[in-house]
Length: 563
Image 1: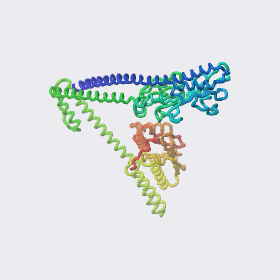
Image 2: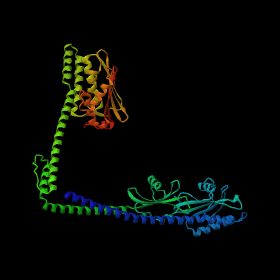
Image 3: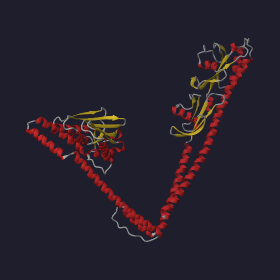
Image 4: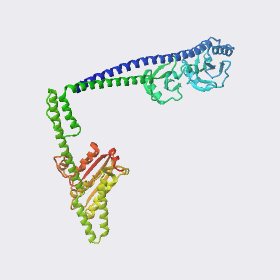
């Protein structure tokens, strides 16, 4: 009774808190975005007003130049006076000059500007001739002139309809500091900035001293319009728009951390209030239920006994409301099921322990040890102390690697060495009945593998694979295969029929099929340790030999138990 009621109430309060959060967040974000958009549009309006004024200067010069008589000898003085007059009313103009578009020869300048020589190689000159119908703006330069923080150049092709040979190029240098100072970065918040860029997203001007590639990338994502973004560990409102009558665009970054903080603070408070309400309501439910539902308390006590791991506690039949009795019956059924599952797990663990013990006994075969010791004694009796010593050393290395201080994984080279020692001992015992070679790809030295995975396969090759009347050969290869390490153990023995191969493959995963513990033990251990990426493959051709391949992922072979 308490749990469903509590869940319904918790769901209701959670939905109420979520609705309040979403409504508040939506309203605050919408209002703040509207305010920041208005601020951005005001900044854009300031820029557009400024550049309209800039363009009007070029328009007035074109009109004035077109009025002159082509044979007038007072062109220079007239235009100089005109330039001086414009500069009187336009304090942001630094220099004004007029040059012939054909050869760059000087026509006129304002009285404070001196002729600077050949201008035909200047970018502003060539672009004005290349695009005669538009105003050409340079990027904004910082501290290029004495006592001028920011400046840029406007150039314009000036057509003279009466004589094309008198076409000119107008060059006007403007002080950009006035418009920059009208929009202090502090208005835009911490790390706020406004950036002017051209159609190719090259920065023309940025109020930030450190323009970042990430900034340009964010601008490209927005193109034109607005977006809420995360930048420099701050939340920003980004507004991007084209400056009318120019090929430039402006991007305005307004810090919106205050909005994010307000939403976060509200969400924390409303969540805290919701939690308090839920806690008080649940406490009330508990108090009421405890006063009227004594049978539930009895059931709760029994559950508490089980929860405290007192599995020997006696479960009683509880009399009370139908719901409580059914709950008690379900609880008792559940406990019986848990007991059955526990017994099953214990049985499986015991079976696993026996399998592991059997696998370990299979690796350290007493008969192998006895036979090897007998061979050593025989060698000593014959006076062949050198071979006896070699066999003792090989046997020592074999068992040292087998034990490996109880670790499950050992260096890959140690595992290969373990197989080598086994073959060396067998070769000493049985003479030259077989030969072997081992090839380990360079670079695998730092990997660790589950121990005792090669020796059982080699043992099968020697015991069952090699032909009795022919020289046998066993080959061990370890190499990389994409993201895996692959071991191939090959022999030139009897081989197997496809049916026998299929039977062995089925026995690896089917508990009902028994075909010895060697291959199955290796397969199960690598699958348990490395997961589904590990595998054991069998390839055999009758009368030609068999290759057993072990595949383990490199990512699992990096970790090891070395300390």
